[in-house]
Each structure stands twice: as C-alpha cells, then as structure tokens.
Length: 76
View 1 (cartoon, rainbow, N blue to C red):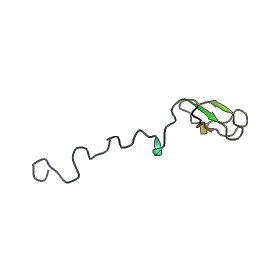
View 2: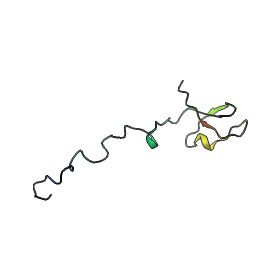
View 3: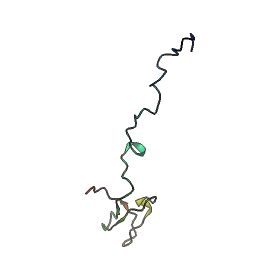
View 4: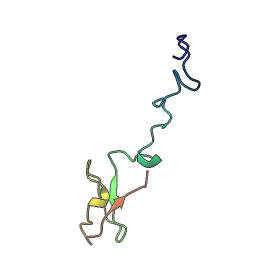
C-alpha cells in the first residue's frame, strides 16, 4: 500500500485475480470432459466396449482386430 490508505496499485485488489470461474468448468485444453461412463469404439471395425474408469480408450486395444480404440462420441 504505497500511501498507507489500503488502495494499492491500479488493477489490483479483490476480484482481479484468478479463480473467479473464468474457466467455465471445461476439461483440459479447453475441451469438454466426456465423463466416466460411455464406450470405447474401434475406428477400424466398429467394435464397442464399455469404457473403464481410469483407463483412456487410446490405451485399450480392440478385442477383435487389435487396433487402438477411441472414445465413442455418440451421446444417445
């Protein structure tokens, strides 16, 4: 507080820092989180398996053809 009156430098003070909800609840890199449920799908043969919590789909191999799986974006 330069003058001792509690004003401080311009642009500082309550309401000017981080943590005010500016992120909007988005996931990493600004995308939307898909949540814990859902399915993983093979981009090659279309086989779908249940998504396992804590295991990314791209770390799973298709049980039929062995290709790395991707997250199913179908919301229905």
